[in-house]
Length: 173
Ligand code: FEO
Image (cartoon, rainbow, N blue to C red; front, side, top):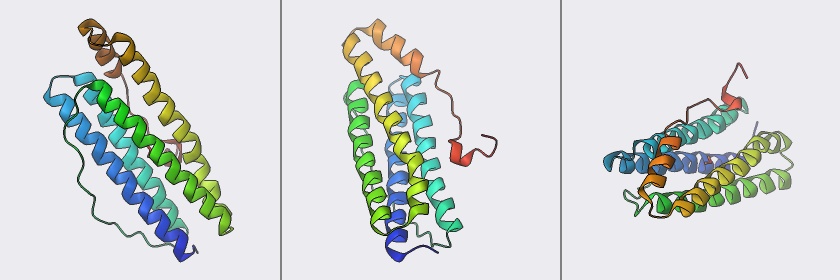
């Protein structure tokens, strides 16, 4: 059984993970529309991962006899000025998610809900990766600036990203 307070906080996080997925899917659609297919691929996989994050919280709430309440997903932006603009948006967004995960962690400790705290450990580590990956791509984009060949190479590189289910959802991991 899970407390009402933690249950509500996890439902809010589920909604935010879905919103994150919408944000990245919108970015994927934007870059697909302007012919940056590699960047679009990267964001499509990012979208899938965010929906996976939501599913991890859903599975956890169900396992703890909680109640999943799906709220409406708010509107997301539809256009970005450049790849750098989109990845700067990504990094800022992931920093916000990190803060939310940290708040959940602190709440779990406050409520002495150690099972929730344990579940959140995976997300704490995941956020380190999320921020590092976005920062690495920003560094590369800043390095090439407006250079078309450089952008083309980064687009090709990001096109190689493949999807793998996150460990908590991967029964074979
Ligand atoms: Fe669900 Fe990108 O963190």
